[in-house]
Length: 541
Image (tube, rainbow, N blue to C red; front, side):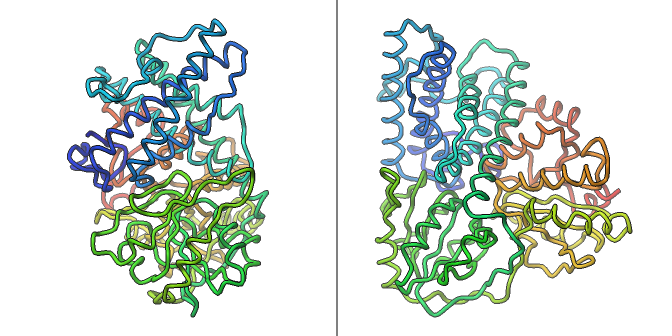
């Protein structure tokens, strides 16, 4: 195997024996084949679209497959194999459709490969001989994976955009071309950033139209006396249906990690058994799932494979694109009917209530609608000198010790700065007592990683409020933590908007070649983090 799609890749070069995430080599090979097949399907779909004919392609297979190969989402060989078979079957159908309708398609291996039984085919982009082309194709692929996740969450709420889907599929199709130049791929990556932003915008629309605009909310960190179900991941539709089905059962529902922002939406506040948030970022689950006592529902990434002696192994449930061996998978909706969460509810009723691991509250709900409502107050605070800088510290958390940097950086920020955050990176500092500025909390949590869209909307609103021509003229600095492919999609979205002077860490993505880093540095002034002391001096200058 060879995998370097996440920030924690082995030795900073690539996982070759076993994934740091827990992915086994045979699964990595299967996922390479799935991506290979998806790329060919994307070529077919794109050329049929260009012909003006309608083949009614099952695009869900593309987005689901991309989502399933995101870091920490799917660890099941059976599940991945089923997805591969479905993609190959659809590819065969489209090949026949092209033949029947006289549609010419490129003569590339990814299109015609419908047999994955042999071992001599080079299925991975890693076999691209040119390092620069290879790196650009990987960046394009990883951005597509993250974007596909957002498209899937929006689709679960009934919000789709066929034009957006076609744009993403066309971008993936470019990774199959073997005679393109660097300029073509660089333009494709710029386009991928624009697509990622549209996908986040679509998901924001889906969430807010369905559940209302997030509002400032204090979320309880304690526990109740009833058995509980812990919901992790990002999919709000799953949470809604679970809450509906737990009414009157004596089972409480808690959020974990990226699901925390569900508490900010007015819709969910009507459920009396929707308690609080239990635990922290995804990587602490091996400790926190033990003390929760009840079942855990993964609606998306991030799964940390449990240890052999973990008591909660029999309490894990998955749904959507996630899967884990020997766990029960909640099936997809059929004919618009809700999923059946009765197995997880029945399991919860057998369990003891959660053991408290902390107490108190955390405050969030500072999405774009809420913060823009405070614009006059914020502008006045900036003009008076009470607020000197806004610091965007969005992105991902991770388990490596070097991520303590973000906690220390937040602690070291002067008291006249405000942190804008979204994603699980917030767990590094949201529970610190950093105080307020004229009633404005110094940590403003917009929500999940896709709610980086809110941070962009806030920046654009401040640009108008301060009457400046360029968002880069605002007193905003960017110190972004990345871990997996949704963070890559967010990064590309920010770059497509022309945002400059970003610092990313804890390390630069391994798949970015030296030439790519040079171009990003020259065009966008992207840098990496160094030390807390040095970065505070540099960024606040």
